[in-house]
Amino acid sequence: MRSGKKAWALLSVFNLRDRIDTNPDYQRPPVWTRSQKQLLMDTVLRDYDIPKVYLRHTGEKPDIYEVVDGQQRIRAICEYFEGKFKLPKDADPVDGESIADCGYDDLSVDARLQLDNYNLDMVVIEKADEDEVREMFLRLQNGTTLRAQEKRNAYRGRMRDFVKELASHSFFDAVGFRNSRYTYDLVCAQLVCLELSRGPTNVKNADLNKMYKDQVDFDSKSGVAKSVRSTLDLLAKVFPDKTPELTRYNVVSLYCVLAELLNAFVRTEFSPLIYDWFIEFEQHRQEQGKLAADEADPVPPPDLEVQAAKDRPAGVVAEGGLFQADQDSRRPGGLGKGEGS
Image (cartoon, rainbow, N blue to C red; front, side, top):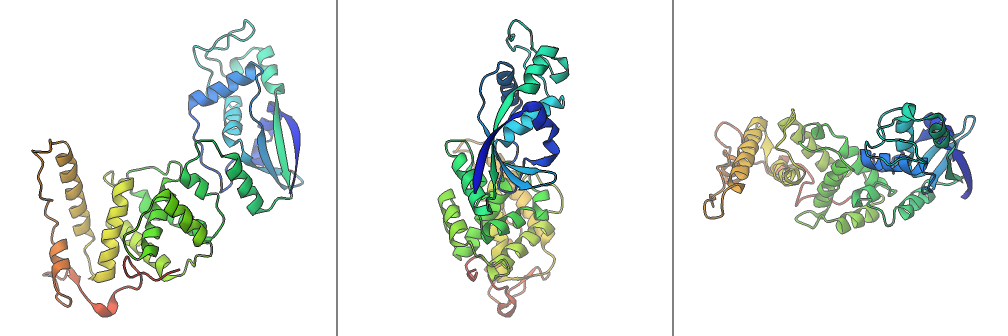
């Protein structure tokens, strides 16, 4: 790997935007607020220094790049040139000239020339392999607000790739939270960690970091992988439409319930029952949470036959054929039964 420092005018950066990949798969998604973007452009107009950008040279004729560090700055610069935001209404004048509430097209000729010709220091990395680039990315983020899952996204290995695959599962179309800063990846990593443990375990960041490193050669065709996929498939069947009650926190608990049901019972058509039970439970929980401690109901709401079905001895069929315990047809894997990767 080798690198060299070059100065690129902002207008050149904008003109090359289609040849600069700001979102390679190890990068975090866009997170800057409008005020952060405005501050950057105000800084440029005042001719103050801004941190250098790191690019990886990935192709020639024409030259192609990906951003290793500085994607938020590159995005903000391009968006300002495109007129997607203006400077603050209370921005102070620059050299006696008002820039308040100015988009790029609103600036004077002198201000636009200052912006166009501002030199941004670029470090261009040549002949670097994936491991070197990801290691550089992580080192450059030290001291920033990069979240733990965003750092794990930059790891190499099959576990990272498997979690990325799970995060695109159709079930997440139904949840009531967004994939902000790889939240879906975080939830999926916790689910895999639970399956690998074969029972209750910590799923804190330190535990997930260890899993990513220990399972770098994870087999995506293993029993654990199949168990996670089948439980997510069931969740997608139970919740085919957008369900605001599905939060980042209760999805993990709900997953554990369905994983145990899949492991212990042969299912027929019980998806509507699970859905109704979950919605009733969440509504009751939220209502109880608004009450004072001495007013809250100490007894959980009825669980619509689920517990009754689980309490039946093996081989006994619930009335209506809802569940049937069948030792021969329980799935391999599952929480408490899973095989290692």
